[in-house]
Length: 425
Ligand code: AMP
Ligand code: GLY
Image (tube, rainbow, N blue to C red; front, side, top):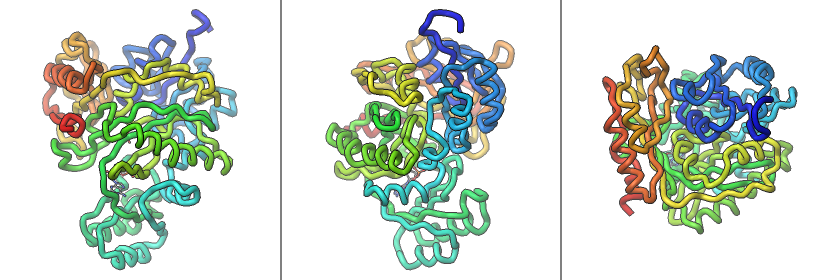
């Protein structure tokens, strides 16, 4: 290894704004990103290996003499990338394949919550479509139908009628719209309340909580229109009061870490608890075993601590010496999307105004972009995440939208109301 002792060689796996944000958090080190995007190419070296190519990623890490692999998306985690790297003694930030089942199988996750008495919506699991339909008919009230496996965020139907729930069962279990991921479904009660994204970085036994964030999943202002991967985020989320935070640590995070360890799959990496909070009571909607996107874009500027030490401590199973806090102030980020996102985004449009935005003090994170000579062009649905960190949420919002207004391409759209819940309080 060349350079000073603290300089590490890090491989970041993924290609979204989340991975660009992590690259900036780790920019003092030598970075390789697989496959990366137009933004990560400016902080490190992109190598074109796909996130699902486990042997290809292991070979890349060996060839590049990588000290730490930081894995962004869930797919390689559920495919066992961390286990494959461990066989070659390469440290990786993320859970083992067995621990990644907390996200990879909703039936496993719900049964785990039940076994360990962790608060969540009441549910039943079905692998027979007729039995699932009979359950919906007997309930006679709106329910939530979830495909068991990974469906890139599309496998959840929050129904408003029995017909809608029956149709979801037909599409998932009979038509197999999501393939094997829909062979088993979880049907659960609709929970009232407000959502929050709660991230804890874990080393198997200990957990470091990051500031609570909130995402905006619907494509249009006022939380209307179809679900997306997320249209914007901010932190801190005032719905997560000190009391709610303490309750999540006591009733969710503690029992989850103890339960996973007791079941032989201690959890390392980041556990992203999707919460529904009703009258101060938090319940688990879902677990993700990776950082949220766009949440990461606001978590990165809010951490008062060293990102390498945090991720490396988790990967090595020792966060004992890690100390960090949350900065004062707030961060807010807006996703700028391509025409027709989320249905069928148009790509190949030239983006203008990027330099102007960065000069204004904002951060500009790339997702669906690629470099085309000197130009940056769109190459995906969520194109950029543009945000700011400032002394207050209102100030961060002002800076972020000022930067957004300077960036243009044909067909660009974004939400104008990111942070509305917190700002209305
Ligand atoms: P999930 O992928 O499980 O987080 O579900 C996607 C979205 O569906 C969540 O972010 C919620 O907005 C909604 N959702 C999921 N489960 C429930 C539930 N039990 N009650 C109400 N909304 C839910
Ligand atoms: N922003 C939600 C997610 O990353 O799943």
